[in-house]
Image 1 (tube, rainbow, N blue to C red):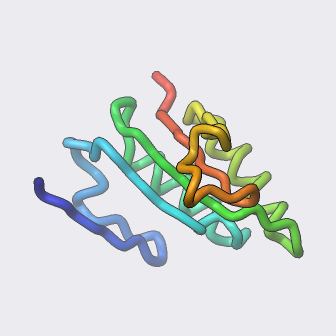
Image 2 (cartoon, rainbow, N blue to C red):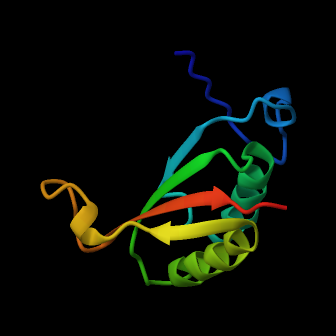
Length: 111
């Protein structure tokens, strides 16, 4: 299986983000704590994914400073184009789960 990693910086999108085939799976973690990163992250997911792409996001619940605002902004923006389902605590691995860790499964909505 071929795996490709692409880095987004300063609004640059590689050719891999512009044309199909779209990835089947996108996984990211700890990326929604900074207000200035939320909009570029959502834009990258909009560009990178199609309706067949599964997106998995994990994050630690943080409420200090702008962290709570960043999460709220992310959920509002991503919810416009993606169905978002939180994985229940009981469905997480009993050894590695934690009450303050959340896992989201996202799928792009049909146009």
